[in-house]
Amino acid sequence: MRLERFLWAKASEVAALRRQEREGGLPAPFSGPRGDFLAGLRRPSGQAPLSVIAEYKRASPSRGVICRDLTAAGVARQYAQAEAGAISVLTEERFFQGRLDYLAEAHAALHADGRPVPLLRKDFLFDPLQITATAATPAAALLLIVGLTPDAALLRRLREQAESHGMQAVVEIFDADELALARASGARIIQVNARDLATLRVDRAACLDIARRFPPQNGECWIAASGMEAPDHLRAAAEAGYDAALVGTALMKDGQPGAALRSLLAGR
Image (cartoon, rainbow, N blue to C red; front, side, top):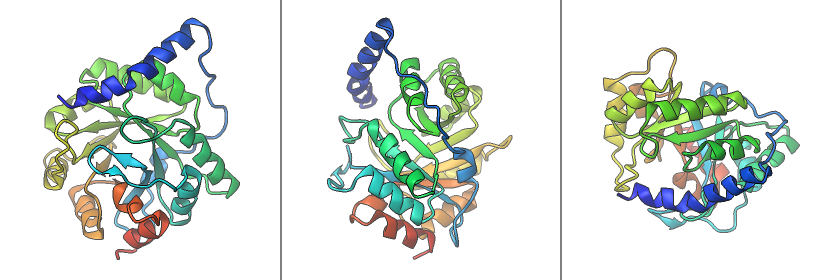
């Protein structure tokens, strides 16, 4: 199962956090403003049919290296100027060439410019100490993946731990069974990934179908992720019941993420 490689990739990080915990050296929680991630998802920009979470993404398992020279601070500034609803920062090192420090770099740039767009830590998180480490950053939200933690009780504990630090949890699913687990855990923000993390196959039609068959309920906020590359894709997601879309590779691949986001939001 390919999901196991992501658990393996994070093993050393979790081990290091456990050593820090034994030695009393875990980082203190971030004390500054995080921003309201959920509010950012509820505010579409300009002509866009839904809000866009724009992603800082240097590489991926399916595409390899996407960009080398764009910094987290520079891209965050571009996305904020292009009116992203929120910004996702990939922090996984082995497969995505990310770093946890990118969250602080993006946050500092945004607040220096007076554009406090909320940040999402996108990574493979399954241990409470990873939530503690995230709480030490300025992230407004973090990602929990049902495929990695297929246990409603654990998902609930991790989500509640995040919320205790003023962060929100995006709970990612791929199919109807995972949606049932997410709802059993009390998830309020549900992200449907069109890419199966086990096979890396993208099925945007299936992503839209889940929202049509099991529409958002009880105030849930839904995000469509992967394969959202064109204005028509955003419109289709909005019509299916999604509140927001997460877009990464399509914005980063040509080296002008801000211009790409502006064009996408304008329907071009």
